[in-house]
Amino acid sequence: MRQAKDDVKIRARAEDRELLRLYREEGDTVARERLVQRHLPLVRSLSRRYAGRGEPLEDIEQVGAIGLLKAIDRFEPEREVSLATYATPTVLGEIKRHFRDKGWAIRVPRALQELNAKMASTIDRLTSKHGHSPSAGEIAAALDTTPEEVLEALEVGSAYTTLSLSPTPGGDDGGSDPLDAIGEEDLGFERSEDRASLAPALGSLAPREREILRMRFEEGLPQTQIAEQVGLSQMHVSRLIRKSLAVMRDELQ
Amino acid sequence: MAERIALDAPLDAAFGPVVRLIVGGIAERADFGFEAMDDLQLAIERLLAEAGSDGRVSMTFDLAPGRVRATIGPLREAGLAGALQDPDASSGRLTLRRILDIVVDSFGVENVTDGHIVVRLEKLVAARL
Image 1 (spheres, each protein chain N blue to C red):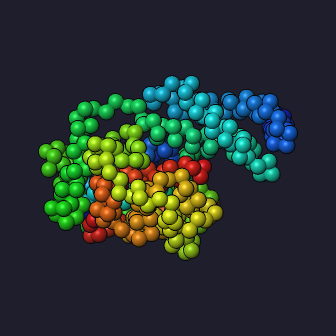
Image 2: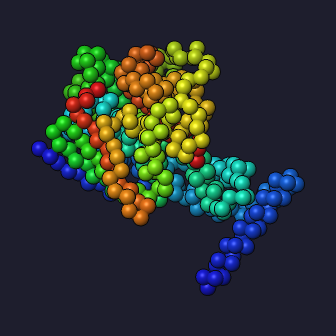
Image 3: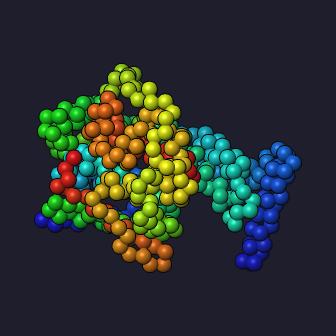
């Protein structure tokens, strides 16, 4: 029984490789389409993990299929792994990116939204007043709420909402972007092929995000100083750092 | 007064916000400022992101006067220990090690068995930012 299963797997891998060869060497797009069809069950299976989060399953599957196409185009047949193994992180990365870009479609209570909207200016005001970043308790006292609600509001703002990497006109940081002028100059961080390095994905970020990462992780500047230099709130700097690192990680998957 | 909080969670990015919320609560109890809290959250988030997405992960947080210590693992991602221990991975490259160097006061691989590792992170309350 097990032998039979192994034989099926080996045959499937050989068929994948032949289809890949036809597509790569002879430009046979029908072969590519057949590869897609053969691996759509994998996409459906991975997509189901993200069902029930406010996005129709069909949409998630379509996004996953884009990841599958990318994996087919990037897969090197000489690799020791199967196409399915190789495609899995690419499909998941595409789905995660979709959710991140679109925002987690959850209903956020209005009170938390309002609290979140006040957070950035309160943190900056208290930092300026006390000379250090305020604790959640201090922020809560200033906003007449509890530390737990402060943490929840921070999380709602940073994890669940759509957060553009560009400044929001009229948002808490105003509409200006002092780093727009940076252009494409070399912003440090040696580009490395090292597995542990995110640097190869730096190119996927806007100049402003790259500059913020350089200030934080090359110069070692605290968020408060970076915020002052780039003219954003500390909270916005924090989110840009987190989001940039996540985007780069997805890019490498 | 020393306190210990233990958490067992799926190693899945979908639970990232839950972990962040709990770490935030722990940091708040330790009187961390916003930035120190954010640093600890980021350290754990990046470590878990590099640790794969299958299985579960245990996290233990020890709060003592002046510090929070997080012990995370076992993690089975191949190459993670090397990425954390490689002395060349610290400067000039945006590596996990470089990120941890900046956002926590100390870190290390405490235990390696059968390809699994346990990572310790420490953030000092005294370094209040």
